[in-house]
Image (cartoon, rainbow, N blue to C red; front, side):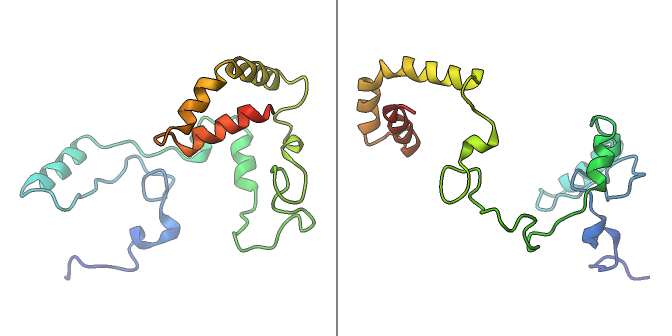
Length: 161
């Protein structure tokens, strides 16, 4: 009987039979299979395999077994999968909808920060406190070692948004 080599029909080579959280995709897995790590010094690969086999890891829980609230897991499982190359589900909506750029609504449409929102008020108060340090912050932003992100933050503070 021939042994070894690539078997295209082996379960581990079937991309539909691989669980991204461990195991081989079968829901009845009690443990994760031991994995051989190539490139280790002589004898250590076998020792690592034996260690893995002596203390097996539990299989990753399935979505149904996870700590999701009841009903949420079944709702997630019942949703159809949409491929990346599928036609838009909302053809009249521009891709920039919800961004502060391009056509469509700006970020206020997301409802994350609105007037009267505690987070928006706190952000405004923090920005007002930071303005007293603006002269020192501008010096730091003009330093050649400062990051572009920091410079952008200072520009944001100066704009008063």
